[in-house]
Image (tube, rainbow, N blue to C red):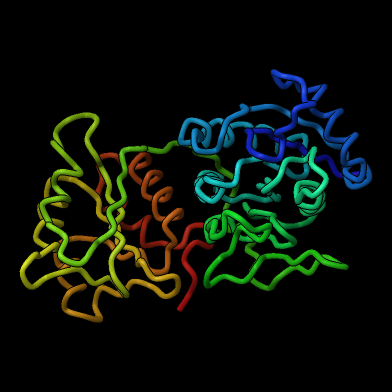
Length: 336
């Protein structure tokens, strides 16, 4: 029987007035197997409690801890399930996809919109699906939710009030779980030996371009670039394929100043589908000339976490950061 490690980080799934507090590993394992006995038929399950936080409080420190736990578990477990709150699940999944290079087994994040202890809950199905998927040959970081497995760095939470909370625009699900488990054709396989690196630099800001936006807002967002706590990277969410105001409020000129000061600027689109092409229109070409990097079809979560990772890996090498951001590392950039 396959061995699956469940790492608990918090979130709605584990919320219950009948659950002992604080969480203890043995008690938590017993409660999960009591409420969802099917898990014991799918795999030999072990649980560890990394933390018990609202996912709004999870970030680079927890991503690094998860990376270390997963790297260590490869010697003893066939797959890993991470119980996580839904609000930032896509950020954590994206971050892990970059931190776990050459991943050779499934790492499946899941959670729920209702607690496991409630009658009308989606937690039981999501947990069963996640453990089932963790026993299969699926060497990717994914999100299992509402009968689908989404690539972690292509997923986004799009509905706060539905069991179908997640989607992966432009990327078909890696698996569909119904009467049977159907594995999709876009599944990746390891291209390199496994290597874990959970370093992330959180000094990244997101700026959504608005009609008539004052370009100086970018400078005020970054602050004094010489300070240790200043912003080192900006994800610029532009219009359409990467367009920004250029006639009277030229955003590109401000981007040039940021790049010259050592700030990495990564451009994504505000559109729900499509990709950035900074050579298609003059208003986008100005960004490219200013030194901004095209994010292609990167989603916001993937863009933020990949930029954080690049800044941590190459803090003093802008050329290496650019090459990394332009490269498809873990399926976050689709061809075409």
